[in-house]
Image (tube, rainbow, N blue to C red; front, side, top):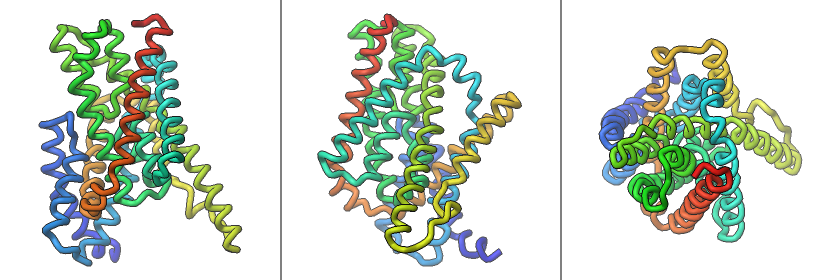
Length: 338
């Protein structure tokens, strides 16, 4: 009861932001609800003074609601169906993800970019944009500004890809099948994948939207191993720091158990073969929870600091985007698809 009394004002505040943000995200899918929520939150932060009564609920939304969103995301992933339909794209997906993570690692060291920001940009670029960032951020204990920074970088290259990839695909002579693989492996966020594929279909009178979406969903599966690996890495880091400080290490305080619930949700959907009529509303609720969390994150983000420190992460995002694009096309050549 005490928790409800502390949090309800901040929760309602984020809900009020999330409703129009989600609506705008559906109207302008290439931008998406999470980006609108962050922008609205940051704008409101400039005109509304920080209120102590709102902060507990805003913090709860940015942390716990975000974790609940990731758990619910698992119900939209039938592992058997996705792998069966997307098996052809697996070599390309593995190559593009590896490329992006390698670029991220190198640039993080060379440019001295904060490791958490670099990690979020890397997984967001290589896996599935906002959803991957939402899943990874609590695992590595990223703060609101790091999350907002990475979401902003991913959004920038999402929009560019959705706008230019259909034309680029036509210029270099991609087939309908080839563009479906290209869009599904080289565009970051699901909404931008559908926007690019829909634009291609409009130009060529084809039906690549379904194949591009399936490839994208197959790529989304990488959330599971990557978040689990990051969880183990965080535990090892915390154990080492605890020993150096002379303190004790407790797995319950550091391990992100919500990731296990996410995996469990995926397994339940797969084993029970839950119908779309059941999973679709859950997926929509998951998306809305992410929008709510981004509203909280936007409100707690210093927009001036975000702009001042944005150069290096944007350059990293650009390098990841170019690397993924090149490797996606190269792998199609190697595999004889294009």
